[in-house]
Image (cartoon, rainbow, N blue to C red; front, side, top):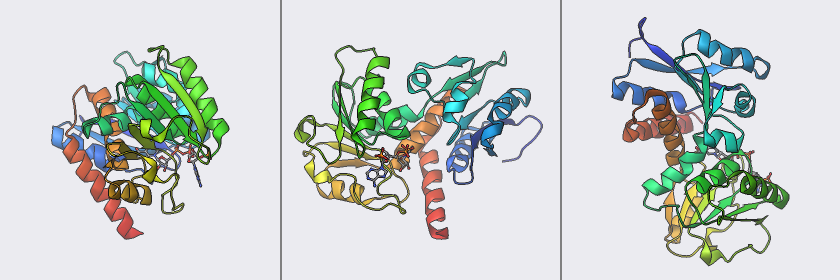
Length: 293
Ligand code: NAP
């Protein structure tokens, strides 16, 4: 890719930002799509986020992704918000409009749902379990509601957090008044029977290299249940392997990451990226990082 005076810029703001896998994924998609643009990491200290967001407009950026710890702060700096960003209260994608105004979107919530839907399971009309009530769990629960789930259960190590997220999203997302929300603790009897669950989103950090183990034994789920493991490094967690060994359909966290990136790309450039190219770039990036240790 050669950068010229015509090359457009897109970024990802985070602190730190060195861990992000988005640059190889997005740059591969830009190259493949023949788009004269480059995607760059932008290390932004927390107390400089307002200046950095203003700078996007001044520097003529197409937009930017936003990652930890800036997603909530950026929410407050937008001129317009999409329905997803509004409900979640966090922005992971900024688009600079032609008039210089800034639109905030949240593609995190769409990624997980699109990943299981691409793998063959529609979320509409289903009973969905979200394990975890942190930032990812909250976003994915909102995504399942937007996708038309019938029942959403949130289970978390700290049950009060699951309860708070279910109550808040239940009040904010009013598209379908018949949608039912349930919450509980990982160690408690589930609020609905395990065999009722059609789709599971594993959104805790349990299973990462630093925190190995299982948040919940996937043996409890019925055959035919579709499980998405949010973690992508390692590519296969214990939860992922056990769910697959039980014969459940399993989708890995890399697909979720790829789908949120693809949704951001489409939001900026008005065209779908090549997902195979993005997936391959991500796999290569994860593998080379694992080799580096
Ligand atoms: P977070 O806000 O810090 O939330 C962490 C969650 O993990 C909370 O629900 C927490 O429960 C739970 N947890 C932590 N340690 C636990 C333990 N020992 N036992 C049981 N539960 C435990 O983090 P996050 O941003 O939501 O991210 C969560 C995971 O999702 C991370 O592994 C991240 O890699 C993954 N993720 C993946 C993608 C993707 O695109 N694939 C995107 C975003 C996040 P408590 O509330 O009880 O502390």
